[in-house]
Amino acid sequence: MEMLRRRFHGGHQHEYALLGGNEKARPRLWTRKHSILVLLLIALATLFFVSLSIRSGEQPCDTPEAGYQCRPEISHFWGQYSPYFSVASDIPAHTPEGCHITFAQVLARHGARDPTLGKSLLYGATIERLKANVKHFPGRYAFLADYEYTLGADQLSIFGQRQLVSAGVNFYERYKPLSRDFVPFLRASGQKRVIDSAWNWTQGFREAMLADEHTNPHHPSLPAVDVVVSEEEGMNNTLHHDICTEFETGKFGAIGSTAKFKWVEVFAEPIRARFNADLIGANLTLTEVIYLMELCPFETVASPTGKISRICDLFTTEEWRQYNYYGSLDKWYGYGHGNPLGPTQGVGFVNELIARMTDEAVTDTTSTNRTLDSDPQTFPLGRRLYADFSHDNDMTAIMAALGLYGETSHLPNRTLVGAPEAGGFSAAWTVPFAGRVYFEKLQCAGHDEELVRVLVNDRVQPLLQCEGDALGRCTLSAFVDSLQFARSGGHWAACFK
Image 1: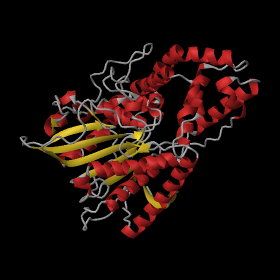
Image 2 (image 1 turned 120 degrees about the vertical axis):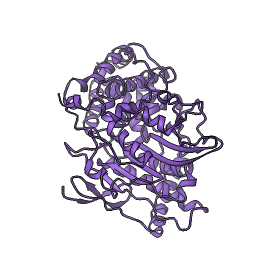
Image 3 (image 1 turned 60 degrees about the horizontal axis):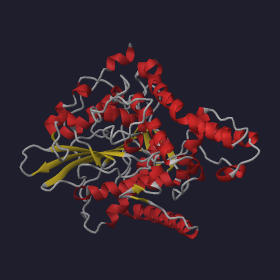
Image 4 (image 1 turned 90 degrees about the horizontal axis):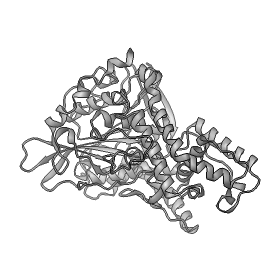
């Protein structure tokens, strides 16, 4: 495939290489002078929006350490549309005493965005129909009389860009002993919002590195987006599912939708009845109730400072917990353990992770791009830091292929199960906007072999599949041995029956 050179905006213009076929990545290195100028622009923009919020009485509440903390009683229950927040961990998330980290890989979701084009059109149509049919909006609904739908489609919001800058800062700070000396190797799946997210992440990493007076003065270079893997139809890409035919077009693709809409009939019917009783003429359907609920997180992340949308208060805290479970069912039965071919979509990435952790060539015949993975320029081994950028569905499949949440019972679709009771599985806890999974190797006193830990949005996974210890650690060999599902192909042949 021919190399394509394109320009795009992630808050700033720069180039990237869209890779496929036999082409190689062409890393683009920035000088410190260029980076300082870019970071100055980002800082000025951030100060501008923060000053606007302060003047309006609006206080930003999103930080690199804790993530989004505005009204967590509702905002941490918006399913996959929740802005990233640090999830409380039963196992301490700091590096255990007597250990030092020797390797770190992050797998991150893109930042907060506008709705997809199809959803954006449906949201707008729902609002227009509501305003056309309802003559009086009483009480808390009063603002709807003059409400205008203004959201765009698909692209990162300013808030979403800033999320990834914060994520880059967070990664640098957590792995500072490595970050001071090593540059992460970055890959992004080929959709624009994912590429933009990866680039904004590099800005956060640069920001933290340039502010660190103890950074190695001979640090080799500043990070860049090294490889963009095409999402064109039929292209092998471990960061984007597409080529498993039975999953994409067969019966397995509908399992998630069926499960979540059975739950809609349970929790959304009382909401629909209340709205239709309060707003004479509304005649909302169950699907339109979901559209109105989804407007809450999307309007919130469309605000540069994440100001909570007024629509959010049309629903109770309990209804938001029910909505979050709707998202959890979607992920569990769509791409997780509840779908027979869900984990299969994540096998390729798991085998790439094994290669990076063991410093051995990738062994895989599923979704990996063998051209890219066999080239040390586009899939280097022996690096200390890696960062990959993807989507929520793909991350869900990868976590399932890793065996994470494998002890969780299948989620019922008539009764709500909270994240703690589901072994930590929840769309908001696993794949929020700007969510991330950290894979760590550690060298610890008293252990001859390196150990492995996995953190999902700061929550240390117990790694029951490889008999993790009280600190969530397995030996590297035990961790790799536990990944037999991925190493044996993960039912890939079933994709083409």
